[in-house]
Length: 218
Image 1 (cartoon, rainbow, N blue to C red):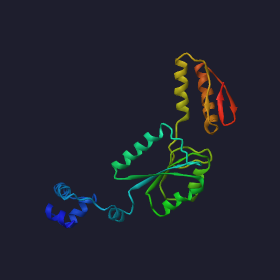
Image 2: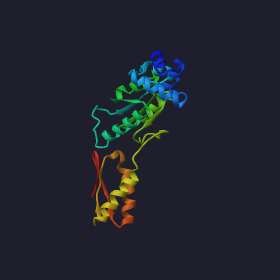
Image 3: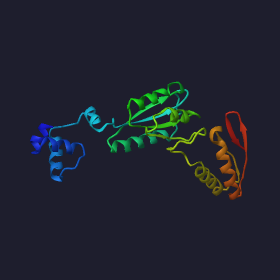
Image 4: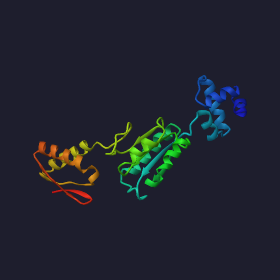
């Protein structure tokens, strides 16, 4: 700090304010930043965290029973997008795969302030309710998938109705009138209800027969 202040011709207090985002004149800020760059100055993360009362890190956690997250095509772009947005605000991202037996790890991270918030992708029913129950009430958490067992306050979920709508309209435009569907049981009922409604409007026929482990449109 003193070296930067000496080179910039300002007080150490001004340097501290400028580097921590507090209001200083544009001229002072310019001189401080130029001096910091010339001296190759990088603030210690621990000191920055202590001053701000946060660790500047957000956790992204997949909760999966088998440590096999079935990395769908959308997951990597999702991680890349989250990382890019966080980095633009000076945050990093922690990533981990959690099993049902280690969900307590998330609670511990929250209690110990290991992260400033969490994005949780639950891949089996019931985990959302457990996390909501055990996390500190004021800890920021956003669920990245809906859970039929509960309705969290903050959740980013796929618009099933719109997805089915786009699919049926596309198939109808291609001349298809007999439409089938294959889906997991977790979401198939809602998708099927949406599909029947939309296919009726489009003049198509849609039916489904349930099978073990899947739903099949015939």
